[in-house]
Length: 234
Image (cartoon, rainbow, N blue to C red; front, side, top):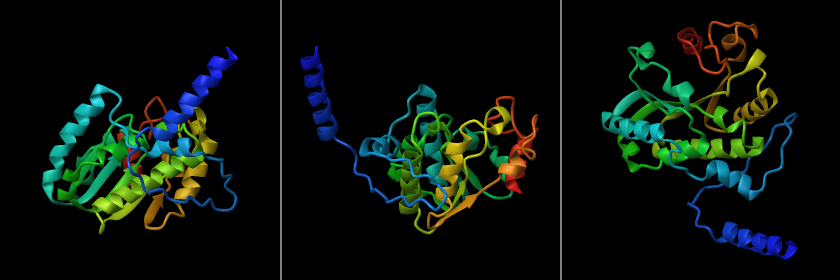
């Protein structure tokens, strides 16, 4: 049995070393003082930064639908991210011209895959707002999530060099808004120091001053109501 485990360990190491992995620009994530830097190995980083195609049929459908937006040319704002972006009705932004590229369930690696299409170069947004990261919280390390987010920022800047990039800091979620709270606050603290990215924090306002129930959230204390999106708009 020990010999079999040893052989499998050798095969696993060879697979991880030899498996083809898309070319990725790896950034050095520096943690500001007061933020604990959880150690990451290369596998942790690759999980969150290697482009991954949609992991459910609805993701493919949403992606194919959103590709049609690439023909719109100049727009004021592009929303990129998970269900928190997808659920935001673009009519709320009127008269600002907004393209919503949010897909429910997306993680950093899924967004990187979607942004891999050359079609997006036809779209020319003045600003980009990224709402992403909450779906990585239950499976990935802080350092790996920050690493994945850094690659998303770089990808957006590469597609649209002249655009301004904003990031809605991962908002509170769950019972008493404390689900994964330590993890998400560490991630947000790092993003605030990323050059060229404006971090936007709405923690106090979106949680009604950390009081439950809060009209800004749906019953799951994860997704926002229309009132919640109005808070962010302000």
